[in-house]
Length: 337
Figure 1 (tube, rainbow, N blue to C red):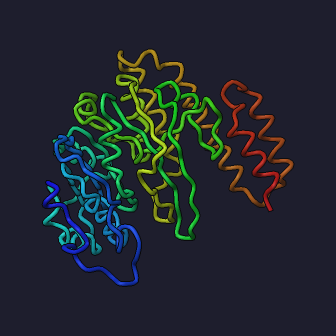
Figure 2: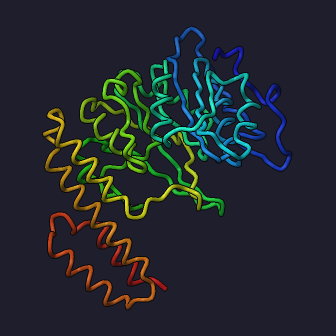
Figure 3: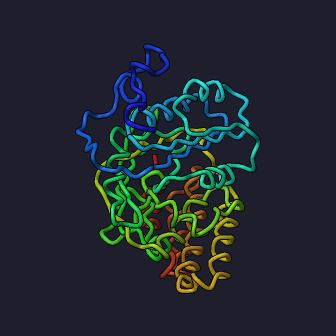
């Protein structure tokens, strides 16, 4: 998509006058574009299934970037809502789209990656919002690097916002120091999928995403990616707003199974043998954190007895269980109303 054919509000489909702000009534930031510069082609991919009520905002946030070398691909999994109607509204500006039954989100992303011809790649889910100027920041930030990581803001419909600032993204860090609280330590690893942008060729070198994973496929992919291609550039710029809502995928009872799948695949691959111990530690913590979540859901139990039980159980494996997340979980239970 060239700069001359980039959509603007003036030539975009009309939307409800009740919607305002980015990307409804505001366009991208006004920035000076160096037209003598060859901007790298960026492939943005959006998988979708029955998220038509969010999808249009996502599409507009990508297309209104005004980025002069954009490849935008949407693969819909055969939605039964208004998703296809929404996609067709913006068809003139899309590189490729299809709507057909698939095997789930991971399969859809593999299909999108196979179609991608850009130098840079990431997927933006159909309930998230790419922020103004993000693609220009990504193009500049990934120069001479294997990957680029920026800020992702988690937000909900009540107006709550919380920035997630990427840092220290290494394979070992993801497996042993991955922060799961809103107060990461200095040496913690902080990673949020829509804020991490890959070099397409390098990502394809690793192979397809594991379709046996429903929730943690992005974590599995980034661990492998940064193990092989560790040169990551970081930015404090907000690239994506990540929507929190009740419809998001959850997988109770499958977390441990997926973790075991990831660890087994790492241990079975000679290239990742250096990650053997970190991967096993990660799996132990993954199962432990699911146990902590069970305690947190038991709101009818004694807060003191629950906290003591957690402390006793954690003593079985202090190196794995004595973490900021564990003690933060105890504090949360003790201060619960």
